[in-house]
Image 1 (cartoon, rainbow, N blue to C red):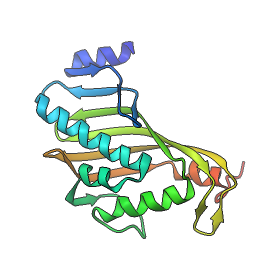
Image 2: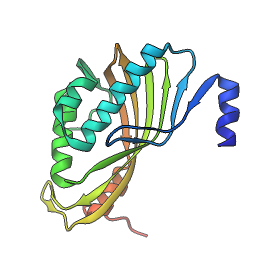
Image 3: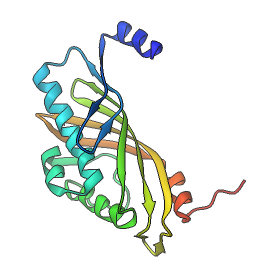
Image 4: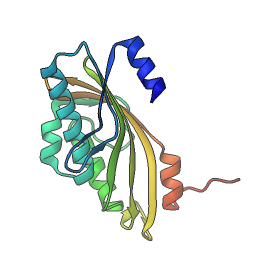
Length: 176
């Protein structure tokens, strides 16, 4: 925490206390103090709605979060581009991990970009492709970089620890 306070003093970043949505937990929220309050609120609201969508699969939360011209800048093979992409991915992932939860470890808001570091967790009790889960616990890290304009996510760059996920699901194996 001392290191974060020193960084805040140097960069002019305001450290906010942990904020919590009904189901989305944000352990630490950092907002650049140069952002007007209305923009801060709209930006955090869009990000919260996006991760609420990942927790629930509720497409109304997705519609509230992303812009009609949303672009996934790290689009995986087989996933549609645009707003249909996250809906497609969440539906498939919730089929594999019905109790999926997303816990946001850190959210950093700077200008029109938000960096989010999070943990996805649950139990692989559904099906992924041809693999049926046996209820095994999964927990893996992911990081998103969101661009938010006028309170809606317009772009997303993301990276997930898929090796950990697939190993926990029994789809991949890591040799010692």
